Structure formats: C-alpha cells, structure tokens
Image 1 (cartoon, rainbow over the protein chains, first blue to last red):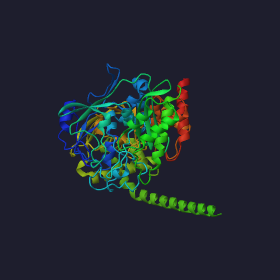
Image 2: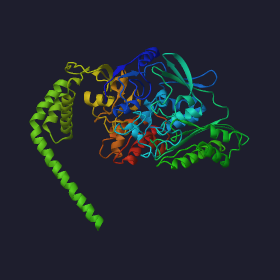
Image 3: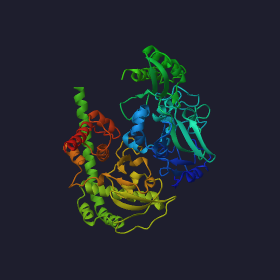
Length: 334
Length: 262
C-alpha cells in the first residue's frame, strides 16, 4: 500500500475544502473521503486505489436518521448499514431497503459500512481488482479482460464494449426502487441528484462511475414518503445462502388495489452496470391484473435489452424468474 | 483396493513430513536457544513485558508460549529490518520504559482505549487496526486470516459493536473503545461464551476461534432470532475451515438459552 496523508476534519466545510484539491473524484482520485473503509481499504491493499490523501469523514455531523415533515426519511451519509437496516421507520415504511441491506455482506461489515460509502461501492469484477489484468475502469485504454474472459458474475444490462462490470450493491437497488435523492455539498454549493441519475453507465468512460466532482461530499440521502398501502421487498439470488454477491436480485415496491397493480417501482441488482431501474417493467405492470402472466411480461420487458456474455447467459432467465417471484411474493394476500 | 493403496501412500508421505518437521523444529530450538533467551530479555526492556512470564517462556522451548514468543520476536526483528526508520513508537500507561519516537512518513498521533487501557501511539497511517493490535501492542489474540474482510478472524468490538480490524486503519479510531478477545475473559475466569466453546468443542485448529467468540458475544445483543438458522446467518462473517460450525452454533445457543433461563 502506498503511503498517504490522513486528515481528520471536524466539519463539512473543512472536508470539502480538503478534497476539492483532487483532480478527480473518480477512479484514480488523489484525495479520497474515507468512512467505513470496507471498500476503499480493501482496494488500497490491492493497489487498485492509491490516494495520496485520505479525509476522514467519520466524525462529521452527517450521522442521523430523521423523519422529514412530509413523511419521508433523511439518512445521514455516515449512518452505518446496520443502523439503517434495523431502524424502526425503515422496517415499517421501507422494508425493501432493510431487506436489501441485511442480504448483503455480514454483520461486522454492516456495522462499518456507511450509506454514502455503499452508494460508491466498487465493482467486484476480478479484472478490476487485479492490477496485473487489463481493465478500462482501472486503467482507461488497457482493454477489458472480462469480455471473453471470466464473466459469469458480470453485467448483462447497461454494458459497453469497454466495460461489463456489475454494480455490486444491494442497498443501491432498493434506493433506486424507492426513488431516493442523493444530496451533495461541494465547492460550488449544494445540489440534489435523483438516484437514477447518480450512477453513470460505463459507455466510453468506465472510470467515471458517478456524477461526483472533486470536493463533492454526500451529506445525506432522502426517501420520499412511502406510497400508502404499498408492499415492498427485496429478493436476492446467489451462489450460497449468505455473504455472497447477487447473481440476480429484484427490489419491488407495489401498490395494489382491486387485484390490479396501481403503482409499481422495479429495480434489478446483480445484472446491471449500475443499479438497474426498469421503467419498462413498471409500464407492463401498471393497471394490469396481479397475476403470473403480467409478471412474466414485465420480466421479459425488463430483460429485453440484455446482452449476455460468454459465461453469463443464464442470468437473463434467472433475473426474469427472480423478478416474477418477487412480484408474486409482494402481491400475494398477507 | 486402489483407493486403500492411495490412502496408505498418502498417510506414509504425511507421516514422513511430520517426522522431518519435528527434526527441523528440534534443530531450530538447539540453535535458537541461547539467542532466544537474550532477545527475550531485550524485548522485555522495550515493551515492558512481565519479567516472570518472559523467563518462564525462555526456559521451555517446546511449549506453545515459547513458540509464540520466538515467532513474535522474529517478526518484530524482521519487521524492524524491513521497515527501518518507519518503526513506530508506542507508549502506554503501564509501559516500563518509553521507546524514543522514530519518525515515519505521514505519522499520526492516535489515542486508543483497548480493553480499558489507554494507549497513546504514533503510527504510520497505513497501519490497520489489526496490525496495530498484533504488531505494536502484542495483543495477538485477534488473528489475521485473509486481511481483506472476508474471513472474520480479526473481529473485535468497537464501541460495543463487532467490526473487522483488518479492514480499518487504527488512526480512524481516535478515542474509540476497543475490546479484543484478551478483554472479554481470562484463563481463570472465562467469559460464558468462551466456556461454552470449550464445553461444546466448538473449534479444531483454533485459528478462527477468537473471531468466532467475538462475533458470538456481540450476537447476544443483536436482533438475532431464536433458531439455529438465524444464528448461522448472523455468524456467516466468520469462516471456519475446519468446519466446526455445528458445534459453534451449539455453543452460542447454549449461552443464549442459559441467558434466557437465568
């Protein structure tokens, strides 16, 4: 691991000023914020990340979960995954978020990992994590080892000829289905970013994963009020029952009335280069009867654009069945 | 028949390897003896270790304790050779003698409270909490397995919650209260979870055990359901390559049921 300077600011302004000097906030950033460290330290040990400076944000006053006046929820950037998953308001109004977080990693890691850190979780693509391998995300222009390589766990949606790395987060998938907003404070002031616009598709610049600029500090995430009478859940399919990344997962938020689906929010995990919102599936579900034929149509629509690689064609059908099963569970009588 | 033959051959080679290892270990002890004794007394001066236990270790080379001390000394010596001026100073409330601080690039001052004791350290910022515990403070109960947050052998409690010490820098824990396996029980007064692990034979080689116990102790305060399946899910961050899982679950359930009854 390369050495770095550690600064421990006491307030947001100091942290932002310290990080604003970086040339980029994306892969290769010379200055990084550090919170739980569960992704960053791992990647620093692998020399995939080698920041010259780390800014410790663990002590910043962005660590609260609070109900908003409109009935939504504000989640501080350094709220730990465990605290978020077990919070009574999250359990009650946003079950999909609680389930998604609890399906990821382990208790120890969830006690460390933070909300903002999870938004920025890096891919588990083995070519990205191994500096001996080509990877356009880690080293632009070096090529993609995963295309025609070991790609069983990698993405089938949102890929490009330069990168097929999966976004590994479970929390992000639930956040997308809940239409969360990411609040950022930077050198230029504050701004709010709908989560669907927060992550970028790899395209020609897979090293750019989010819209964040140098000095941008995620301060909190807000959730809109839960739709009245909605049911939400997260279904995750993986190679083993615990402590494994998703091969395919589905976050569904459904409001049903008179055996018809009035409103649906659908996001998929484990299959996309970013947490995958499927408005196509939502359109197939809205105002339709809640039955298997509808669910199957929605699943087909969600995966219509899938581009499987040499080893992961199974994910197309797996993701469809995952979504169909999640919809069944979310609409069956309580 | 073929299988028996193969198995027999494997066993023969295995025994031969063990025999060779024993001879090598004996020779190492013969040559290492005098040197070891001298080094150990030096290490006492520099770390303020207890005189009696050091002498005891110095006289019984075959014991696990002496092997630990030998390896520890070897590690510290080689680390010093490798790191050179990067070696960092430690001062603790009960240290017999403070070593002079040696400068390290980007060194940071850190105050940690570990098992109720205050430590003021100057550390290379890259020092993981695990390396700080093991290499700087000689609290070797927390183990280094994967060093990437995948195995759980390094589990400690930070402000009452279990976390992975390998996946965090010591310098991020200014003022935090840290509890290691050394802080939850003593050989003469085991924590109920430690006693249950012994009772249920919840280990084989023992390498993952301190991490398992730290997770198990934390689990008692977590929202874990009553079933074995729930315990397994909550313990999935602690890998046991010997496969002692059924007995680990039994030990944990024994303590939980006892706690409920009591």
